[in-house]
Length: 108
Length: 108
DNA sequence: TATATGCGCAACTATCTGGTTTCGCAAATT
DNA sequence: AATTTGCGAAACCAGATAGTTGCGCATATA
Image (cartoon, rainbow over all chains, first blue to last red; front, side):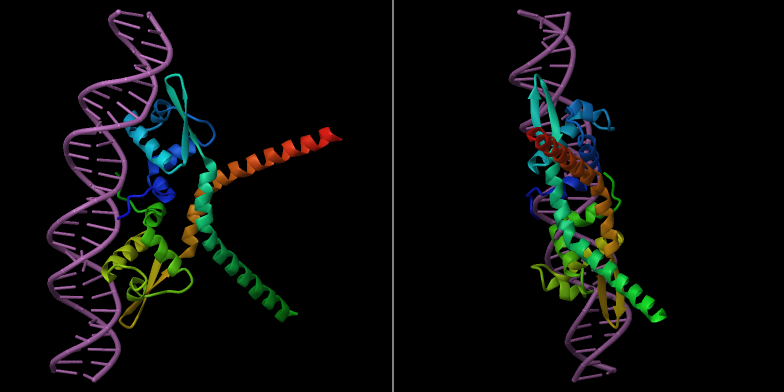
């Protein structure tokens, strides 16, 4: 198996998804994050390391505290992967639209 | 750790993502899918089982062959999760827009 | 009927995962 | 200067993951 980190690896864990949502709007310290979960700071620290390796998160030191911040643009990579399926949704939607238009014309 | 299957679990594996893309447009048999990868049919079968458990894939028997089809609507769940971040992107885009408008007015 | 083919399931294995506890370092507080 | 606080890194562990091989069953072909 590959051991390389990618964005999908980052979001597979439910705790990690919750962390991402938590820090989406404001940077937080590991301790502050850990308070939101039933787990230790060290466990959160490990999640943050993985998120950092995926470049989904950056840190800025402030005294002895480290604030972790979401690099939200990185989330767009998932959006880009989804694009291929969105095309299919839209194609089907248009097909349905045509069917409805045809039915409408037949009624005339 | 949870053992429950969710859509994120389905897409974390690169082979599984490739399978999803492969069968997005037309249903395929395990053998046909396996031909596209450097792995055995049994391994593909295991992936298909996981995808089925996630309700991302359905099967239809045709003689001794089983065709696996993507339930593309299920992919929308990822899209829904992404929506919260898309809101942030758009909010920032609008902020930028305002800044540009302000600059424009100052020039007048 | 005998043989081919397509398939899922079970057993086994190496590796990855997410968690814990323990530790040491640096910054803040006393 | 001594203690407390915030943090990451390392060692360890149970469980999950993705792959393999071997098997039995059902359908198609000879």
